[in-house]
Length: 254
Image (tube, rainbow, N blue to C red; front, side, top):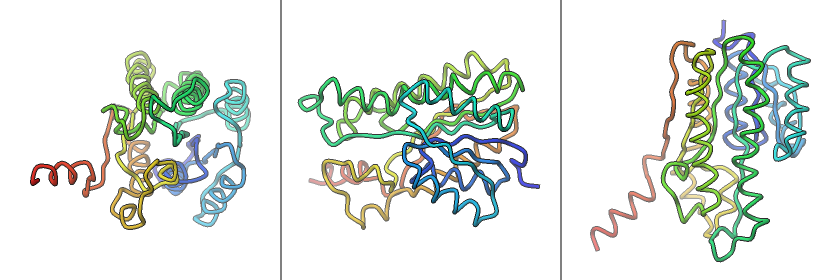
């Protein structure tokens, strides 16, 4: 029997990249996966991939930056399944104009709501279901920018992803007595569509050297399959050819 048979997982940002890879990996482990994102088309594609692999999923599209939408989707999950065992808080975004000299209140709101507020809404929506069962795993895609402020990622993105890490740790501080575990996953550069929002374009060769969505998806699967008496509070995953390290080595030689 697969490790997650009978479990229900809610994966946000499931239409592409890390979210899609995680959803497929969890479904292969036997979980029924609820797929959420703003665009239904990509979610349907993920659902088709899960079906082809022999897994089960359901598409529930919606804008997670709206608290009422999150509440509606969570209530639908509880009504349909009576439980939510795993939350993969993966929805996120960034913008091209990310310097302080370019940011506006509206653009900052977009990045902070897309990466932090939406994650908070999902956590508060699923915790009551998890408390009832005295069990549950929450896995949040933060970033290396959530540990080390990054001009490359931008002020708003760095701040929001730092907030995701803090959110995850406080969940463990309060909910450990309820058997609930929370993990902040902090990837470095991953070859996902969000790279298209970089101010400096990333080449195909550079993307090939990065961590891939499937690498992070498999890490999320591993975390979700851990026994209930242990938690990975936080974990980093990076490409071996770390462009930041390589640039530092080149500067040291010059």
